[in-house]
Image (cartoon, rainbow, N blue to C red):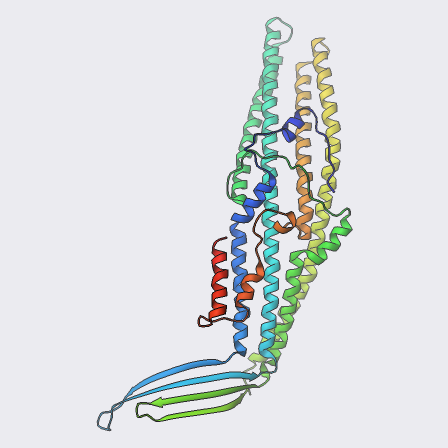
Length: 452
C-alpha cells in the first residue's frame, strides 16, 4: 500500500527537495538506532538470563559431586587430640515423576516468551525511530513555512507603510500589518523551539543528533486490507506470542507444583578416609517424600493455578489490544490519505484566493486585514498538508509495528542480525567451567556479544 501524491509550490520545496550529499535517510537512522539502542541491549541481557534458567533447570537431572574435609580437636588427656578425614559424596536423581522435566520445559517456554518480548522491543525502538525521524522533518517544514510567512508579512508591512505615506491607507492598516508580523515572529520562535525538542527526541532514540533528513523514496508494503493485517497480527505479533508461551509455562508450573507431593528416588554414594588410613565406601538408593508440610504444597499448587488463570486472561486481553492497534493504524492511515487530498484542494484554493484578494486590494475593493487573513489561511492549509503527509508515512510503519513486522530483518537493514538462539545453544546443556568443548563454545559466544 502507500498512495503517492505530487506536491506543488512551497510544499514540494519543503518535503521533496534535493539536499546535499551529507544528508541521511530513514534507513540510516534505523540502522544507527538498532546498533546503539540501550533498550535492545538490555533486553538481550534479559534473554540471556532466561537462557540460564534452562541451564539451571537441567542440572536437577545431573549427578551432584561434593567433597568434605574435616579436622577435629579433642581433649588431649584422651589420646590423640587431632583427627583428619576426607570424604567424597555423590547423588543423582533417578525418578521424581517428571517434576524436574516439567521445570525444564517451563523454563524453555519462558525463553521463547522472552525472545518474543525482545522482538517487541525491537519493533518499539524502530517505530520510535520512525516517529522521531518524521517529527524532525515535520518541525523543519513548520519552521520553513513560518520563515516564509515572516518574509511575506515583512514585505506586506513595508508595502502598507509606503501606501500610508501617500495616503492610500490609514494608520490602522499599518498597525494591523505590524501586529500580524509580530504574531508571525512569535509563531516562528515557537516552531524553532519545537524543532529543537524534536532533535533532542531524535538523539534520545537514535543516539545522535539528526543531519539533513531525506524524504523516503518509497514506503514499505503493507496488507491491502485491515482484516489481512489483523490475521497476521494474531499469528505474528510478538506480544501475542509472548503471552502464548507464558500460558504454556504457567500450565507446566501447575503440573510441577501438584507433583511436589510425589516421592523422589535418588542414588547416593560416599567414599571417605581418615588420618589412620581407614577408609569406607557406600552406595545406595534413597526414597524420600513429604508426609506433612503444613499445607505449603497445596498452597503452592493453588497459587500456580491462579497465575495460570491470570496469564490466560492476559492472552485474551492482549489479543484485543493487538486488534485495536491494527485498527488504529489503518484508521490513522485512512485519515491521513483523506487529509492529504483535502489539504491539496485547500492549498490550491487558498493560493488562488490570496492572489485575488491582493489584486482587489490594489483596486480598493479589499482591506489590508482581509489580505492578512487570507495569508494566514494559506499558511494553515500548508501546515495541515505537511502534517497529513507525515501522518501518512508514520501510519504505514504503525501498521507494520502492529503486526510485529517492524524488525531489522524484515526491513532489510544492513546490520548483523542478532541470533537469540546462539547463547541458548551454548548454555542449554549447562556447561561447567571444567567442560572444555562446551566452555570454549560459550566463551566464543560471549566474546561475540561483547563486540556488538
